[in-house]
Amino acid sequence: MSNTALSTNHSWFDFELPPDRIAQHPTANREDSRLLVLHRQTEEIQHHLFSDLPKILLPFDLLVLNNSKVLPARLFGFREKTDGKWEGLFLRSLSDNQWEMMMSTGGKLRPGDVIVIPSPSTNYLNNPIKELKLTLIKKTEKTWLVEPNSKLNAIALLEQFGHVPLPPYIRNGIPNQEDELRYQTIYANPIGSVAAPTAGLHFSEQLFSRLSQNQIATTHLTLHVGHGTFAPITVQDPQQHPIHSEWCQIDQTSVDTIQSHRSKGGRIIAVGTTSARTLETAARDGTLMPFQGQTNLFIYPPYPFCVLDGLITNFHLPKTTLLLLVSALAGTELLEKAYRIAIQEGYRFYSYGDAMLIL
Image (cartoon, rainbow, N blue to C red; front, side):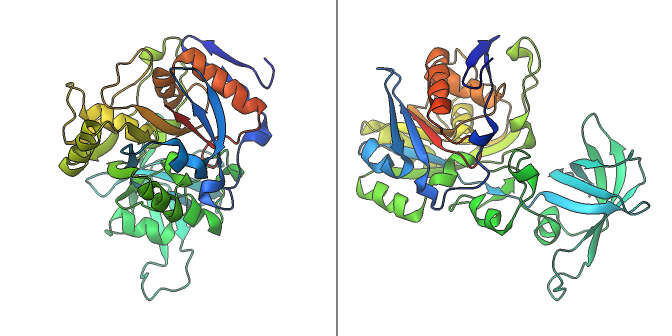
């Protein structure tokens, strides 16, 4: 398969991407990224900048944003017995003062092993713990259960010891100071994601102001992005893929805002697949209602969307459930064409890459 080829295989996309198409850094300004606009009815494809969004959307259109904030979930340390380098990713906190984590190190880890994580800060006035120790309790299929040597909650410990959880395709997952700001949306509030809802990274205060001037409004919901969002589909039948579960929430205020804009003829445009998943979860019974809890909704073609009229999304990894969700909205053949053109035209892919607007 050539570098610009894109093909379907058992209803999901499998494409080869030249390494230089994977964005390693964000654009100088958030709204400087490119925007491929895909019109489903006419199958027309247009090329814009993200800053053109206020001119592309219509008055009374509504953007639905995921306001989840990314945890500093990446941890670097060493094995207490061997001093061997260790790296881990916090996934979630359990009720019995244990964490679930993914980790990598040289050699074989065993229950009872201790990981030492030095504090990145030398200011201990506000950080009384000089080093964090994690005792390995039990190994599951792909993760470890560990117990920290502190009763402080996970967020407090991660804020002192953690780093930005860049995905491995960006500089091998090694963050820098710029990432602390740019791998986070400007409207992020409730903390809980281990990966950024990347479609929202393109929005700036200036862009929101221009959208508002054009009577294009926004509302928020929350979905805490889990590591499973990147999991590739490896089974022959995508419907048999074990879909990941994520916590999400949409309140009555946002539901009312959506219904109000729809009554005025406005379109409901999800910013990101996470917003799309939350909206469709909250409308599983055919009517959009407030919702709070875990969602295991798996959206793949064909899917009867209840809420969405459009979607803003980045360009996704091959063979992932995110790509299936987008193809359910755009149509498999049209999305295949759009990705092929995006590769040919030099669009930047993945978390720090360019965006697509599907209308």
